[in-house]
Length: 126
Figure 1 (spheres, rainbow, N blue to C red):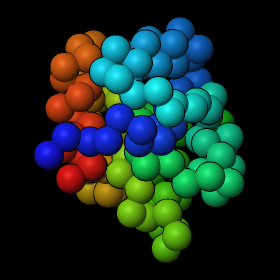
Figure 2: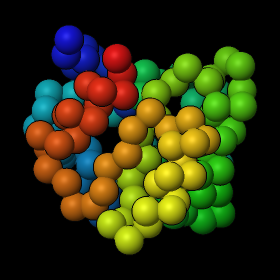
Figure 3: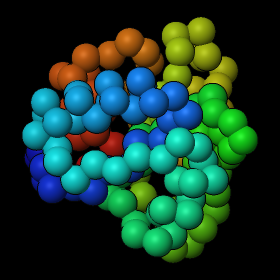
């Protein structure tokens, strides 16, 4: 079953170029309801204000990492059911394993294609 294209998605990354790349990939896939945050702290505030249907977060960010954001989401009864896909570099195997244990619903290793991202979104939102 495919994910609804009106699914509200929050991209979280501390690098504006990567946010643009992710936003463009999501738009290529037909997702238009996309917002972004520059770090975990800003993301958590946005999530509490308006709960998204999916969070896609870079693991390495400052001051609040994607891993800390993931733990905060999964520890909050009102937020824990939000699917979270974490983005990592290929060499961050241990971080990806830790994120999976902390409740990540999927992970994407950079670089990835629009098709790979779509498969990750479909799997995470089942």
